[in-house]
Length: 111
Image (cartoon, rainbow, N blue to C red):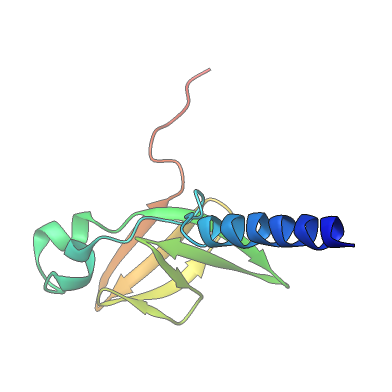
C-alpha cells in the first residue's frame, strides 16, 4: 500500500511539472504582433507598409482575415482602413477614395 502511495505521488509530481512547462509554450502558428505595429501613427508611410495579409479563414459563408496580427472581417477597421472585401487570396481595404489590395501571396509564382 505504501509503495502504491509513493508511485502515485511520483506520478502526480511528473504530471504537474509537465503541465507547468506546457504553459510556457507558444503557438507556432500565431501571427507575430510587434509593438511597432501597435504604436505607430495611423497615417505614417512606414505604418502603411506594415499592413500584411497573413492568412484567410473560411467562416460560415464568408471569410475572416489576419492582417498584421489582427483578426478582421468585412466592415472592420485596421490601421485606419476599412475592410471592404475578403477573398480566399486577398483583402481589399478602403481609406477615403484610396483602395488597397493585400494579397496572401505577394510574389507571383511562374511556371
